[in-house]
Length: 126
Image (cartoon, rainbow, N blue to C red; front, top):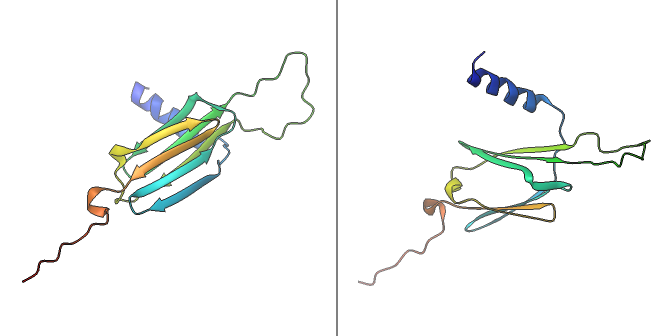
């Protein structure tokens, strides 16, 4: 098995594992879209975003640390990973994505491409 095959198998294994789907709000205006993703418990170091062609992937892993002297008798969060995949419109300029991560909320701003922006048309007077 070569390195490329190993990476492909690891990537496929990650896609098949159980994950939580984070809630995301999407707002659109005339200049682009803004996404707000709730990722409680995830740190900046454990957050990954990737754009591949027309696909945006957001992944994060939370660290659930339980003190050694405590036995967990009930846990509602059994999947410490988040993953959400979006298909992006060709009207969006993926080279200009801006991201902020603050207090467990990821904010992504994706502007529309120049050709998709609204523009005024000048009318000449004859």
